[in-house]
Amino acid sequence: MGNSQLSAAKKAKNDEFYTRMTDIEHELVHYRDHFKGKVVLCNCDDPFESNFFKYFALNFNPLGLKKLIATCYSGSPIAGGEYQPSLFDDDVDENTGRHRRAYKAVVNVFRDTTGDGGLDMDDIRNLLDSGENELTELHGDGIYGAGDFRSKECLELLDEADIVVTNPPFSLFREYVATLMEHGKKFVIMGNKNAITYKEVFPLIRDDKLWIGATSLNGGRWMIMPSNSEVESPKAKKDRNGDIILNVAGVCWYTNLDITKRHEDLLLYRRYKEDPSRYPKYDNYDAIEVSKVKDIPEDYWGVMGVPITFMDKYNPDQFEILDARDIAKSDKQRKKPTLLIKDADSAINGKPKYARIAIRNKHPEL
Image 1 (cartoon, rainbow, N blue to C red):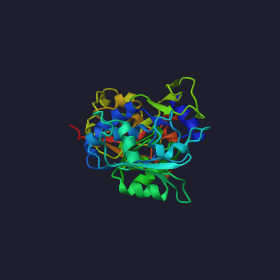
Image 2 (cartoon, rainbow, N blue to C red; image 1 turned 60 degrees about the horizontal axis):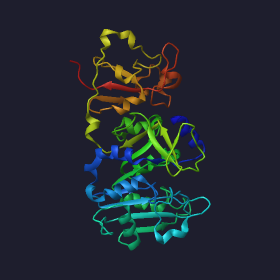
Image 3 (spheres, rainbow, N blue to C red; image 1 turned 45 degrees about the horizontal axis):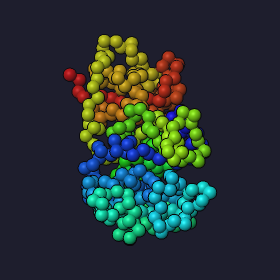
Image 4 (tube, helix red, strand yellow; image 1 turned 135 degrees about the horizontal axis):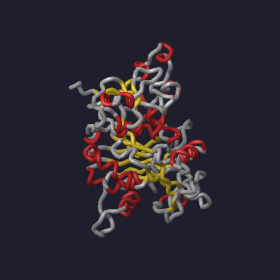
């Protein structure tokens, strides 16, 4: 289902997952104060159909944005031909429904152009057509294709931006995050939940340079895939355009923007001293196993191995995240590249557990 579909799509290099507006709204409401006066870049978002572009365009004035930029790659599909500026009407392949070229859309102003007293996507279209806002073609740089986030012209846009918000290609997630960090960007992006365990990502989490967003890991995320996608699910729904609506349980938000929810303490109810047998120690690490986040004890001050779902509740003021190598019992274990308690090294009495994050309670013992 969710994770299997993500895996199948990754093998097929199918990155055409689109995020529902409701999920975008539920997450980004937590960051509203961060956007005022800022340049927002959606650099993996087709301005013809992206709900990220639509969200920021329609909320351009309420958020107080300075500028909104969206880019897409050539071959990006148009959902139902919802919006095609007249300047590029001839750019759609009739057989595939895809753009032949890549585009950059820039919104500098959002006002009523129709005289109906409201603001909607028709006004965005009119402002793009009139030239008050900008819609131009991207060309690539000879190494990366047009609209690729790694291309020179897209990296120049990245340097111009203050905050990046998008659903990047999950097959390139490691490289995408590395690019954001290299350019010192603030961001709110979506990715596979298992990216927490990536060797390129976990050190950023451990060092408090990246964390899980506000609404992550609380059930699945309904993602949209075009109707001509190679990956389908027998349990998927379809919208009125025939596009696949898939519950992807393995998706969450990643960010480095601080929000109030991140500093809420996880309430602890269990007590280690009442039943130590509930918390066995690992064979190869000096830590106790806590198989469920709700079972984290309030009275234990040593190292604990917890599921990666803990990151949804992680408060850096309450807990410390450790490198598993620092709590290994032997030199052999300390020399292993893994930063988590996982695989055979997560064993208890010879039986391996799932991947665990090593944490320690920061609060002083009372």
